[in-house]
Image (cartoon, rainbow, N blue to C red; front, side, top):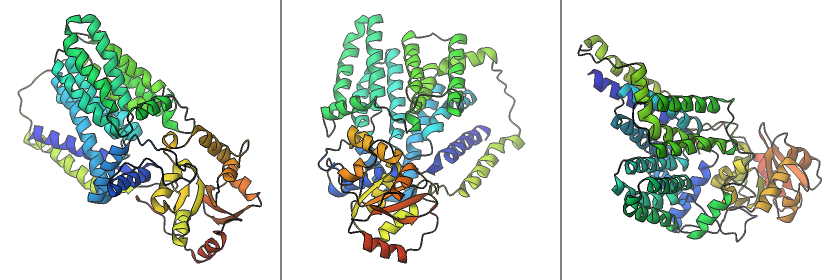
Amino acid sequence: MWRIGKVILDICVLTLVLSWTTADPDLWGHLRFGLDIIQTGTIIQIDPYSYVTTGVRWINHEWLAEVLFALAWTAGRAPGLILLKMIVEFLTFGLLYRHLRAMQLRHIQATILLLLMGSLLAVVFSSNVRPQLFTFLCFTLILLIIRRAELGAYRRLWAAPLLLMVWTNLHGGFLAGLGLLCLWAPMYLVVNRRTWVHIIPPILVCIAAPFVNPYGIDLLTFLLRTATVPRPEITEWQPLLLISIPGLLYLLVLLVAVGGIIRSTQPRRPILLILFGVTALLPWIAVRHLSLFSIASLILTGEHVGSAWNRIWPYRHTDNPVSPWLAGIPLVMAAALMILGSTRELHRIHMADEQQPIAAVALLKQSGVSGHLATHFNWGEYIIWHLGPHIKVSMDGRRETIYSTAIYQQYQDLYSGVKDWDALLRQYRTDLALVYKESAIYNLLTLTPDWMMLYEDSKSVLFVNRRSSLVAPLKQAVAEFTPPETAKYFP
C-alpha cells in the first residue's frame, strides 16, 4: 500500500503542477492557423491576416503543432488543449523518470532529480500551450537514442530520421536535436572507427529527414537565417542572467551535475560529457534553452549524480514493514491534492487581465467594420483570432516567418516613437491604431491632427485615421458600447 500510495501521490503532484495553464500571447494565432489548415485542407502559404505582407510567402514552421492544437480545441475546447499539453509533458517526464530508474537510481532519487533539474523545464514554459512542448519531448527522445547508441545499440539510430521528420514540422527546435546528433556521430567514429557502417547510414538519413516538409529547402534556409536574429524586446530570447531566478536554478543544476560527474564511480563517457557541456552553453545564447539544458542534465549526468549521492549517503535497506498508520499517508495527501486541484479551475486556460486589449477588441467586433489596424506584436494574434481577416494587423507574434526586416524596423520605430516614426502608417493605408496607454506612440498620435482618439481604458487606446471611412460607424459604435466584464479565461 505504501508503494502504491507513493506512485499515486507522485502522479497527483505532477497532474496538479502540469494542468495549471495560462494563455501565451501566441496561442490565439496557433489555434487560428491550425483551424484554417483543417478547414481549407491546405497549408496556407500566403498570409491573409496582415495588411503589410500582401503577396508575401508565409513559411509556417509550426504548422503540424498548430493542427494538433486545433484538433484538441475542436474535440474539447480549453480542456482539450490542457489535456494535449499534459500528455506531452507526462510523456517527457515519464521518459526521463524511466531513464533514471534504468540507471539504477532509486525512486526517491529519481523524483528529487526530476523536481530539481526539471524546475528549469518548468520555469519557462510549463504553464503554456506552445509548440515548444513537442521540442521538449523530441529532444528527450533524441538524447535517449544517442545515449543508447553510445552503449552500442546502433539500431536505435534508425528511429531518429522518423523522429526528425515529424519534429521538423512541429517546431524549429529540431535544429538542436539534429545538431547534437551530428556532433556526436563524428566524435564517436573517431574513437570507434569500425562502427562506421552502423553510424553513417542512419546519420545521413537524419540529415535528409528535415527536407520532408511543405516548404522543402526553403524552411531550412529560413530557420538557419533567422536563428541568430536579435530579439531585444523578447525576454526568453535574451542571454541568461545569472542574478535571476532562472540563473540561480541553472547554477544549482550545473553544480549538482558537475559534482555528480566528479564524485561518480560510474564510467565517464567523454563524448556524452562534451554534449552536456554544449547544452550547458546554450542558455548563454538564449534563456529559452534552459529547458534543453535541464533535459540533457538528467539524461547525460543523472547516473553520475545518483552514484555520487550513494557515496555521500549510502542506502541502508531495511525489511521492516511500514506501519499501517503510515502506509495510508500518501493516499491521504493525494486525495488532498486532488481536492485542492478541483478548486483551481484546472479545466480552464487562465488569462491575465492586463495581457490583451479586451474591451477595445470587443468594441471593434461589435462595430462590424473592416480595415487595417496598427498594433503591437504581442496583441496581434489575439486580434487575428477575434477580428481577422476583416481587420488586418500591422504586426503579430509570427515575426520573421512573415514580416521582413524592413517592416519590423518600421514597426519598432512606430511604437518607440523614434526616427521616421509614422512611416508604416503613411506607407501602408492604415485606418486604426491600437496602442498601449501612455506609450510614446500614444503621445505622438494624440498630438497628430490626422488621428482621432476613439476609445480609451486602463491599458489601451484606440485611434482612427480622420481620413478613413470608418470614422462615422465607429463613432456610433462607441456611443452604443458597454465595456464587457473582465475576461479571465481563454479565448
